[in-house]
Length: 134
Picture 1 (cartoon, one colour):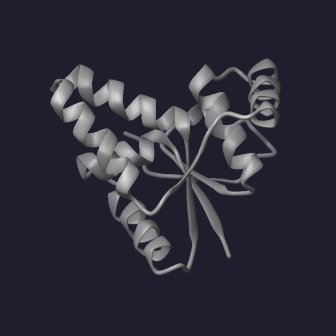
Picture 2: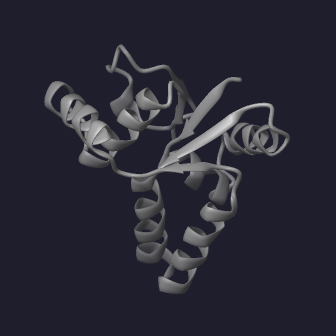
Picture 3: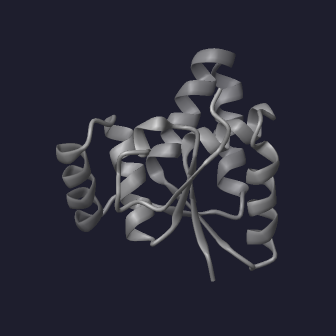
């Protein structure tokens, strides 16, 4: 079964109904029907919470955070092997700390990373599917 890791940008694309939202919604529908597996990194939960909180207020941020937890996504949390993979990526590529955790999660899950972030483009070992950039 094919696996996908939804980056924070994919989750926010869906929430904002931005270009690419239909692709994210289609993957989540397939995950609900057990045709694909969707993963998410714990870091994306924090990023959704703080970004929506910052832009729309605390109540909206908490609602977005809860909405993510109800999606058909298997959430991957920190572990020593994930930490080492994220550190390796951060040491070798110019990416944010959050993106290093997210890319490491995609690699650990052998998942295609669905994203809107050009920071992932140089990571040769990463399977990725970019959504339309803004």
